Amino acid sequence: MITVLKGDLVGLGLDLVVNEANTELLPGAGICRRIFETAGPGLVRACHEAGRREFGDVVITGGYNLDCARIVHAVTPLYMDGYRGEDEDLRACYWNSLCRAYDYLRMSGKERVTIGFPLLGSGVFGFELREAAWIARKTIDRLMRRYPEAKAIDIVMVAQNDAEYAVMKEAFR
Image 1: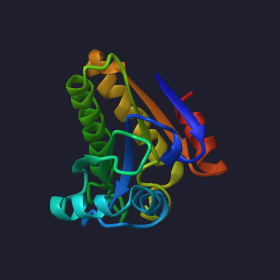
Image 2 (image 1 turned 180 degrees about the vertical axis):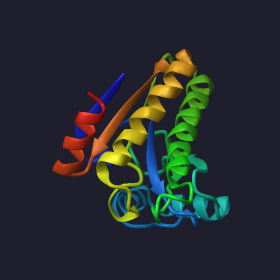
Image 3 (image 1 turned 135 degrees about the horizontal axis):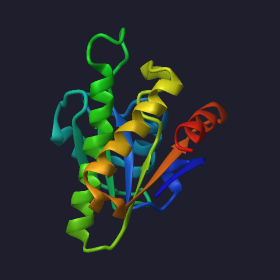
């Protein structure tokens, strides 16, 4: 099941929360900053220990002070010109995050898990909102068709503002 909400990803009480991470896994702007501020210093240490990552990579940490079991750090590409594989890197963020969610599902013994995503790659990272939303939708659909057992993962797409919400509702209709 895929749900689109407008609100604060940090306080939803989901099993997994996806952080729009940079290559250094350091506190950034927007939702990334909010996640680090809420989670506390343990998250900074864990990300420092994980080290530098490439676009499309995913690192999972504990939830620390966040109301979630785990944080999935998806290293989101910067949109340059559309000719450097940015869209493929963005697809990898969603695909790899959902693979980690499935790993967590199996490890936890739960029948279902919830994972919350912001609209990765939008805003200051440069993808146009509509393009970022459709990349998310198509990637999620492809993974769910290929791996039907992943349907035990409930996906919550969380918009941070009205513009994101409208575009995400359209893409995930």
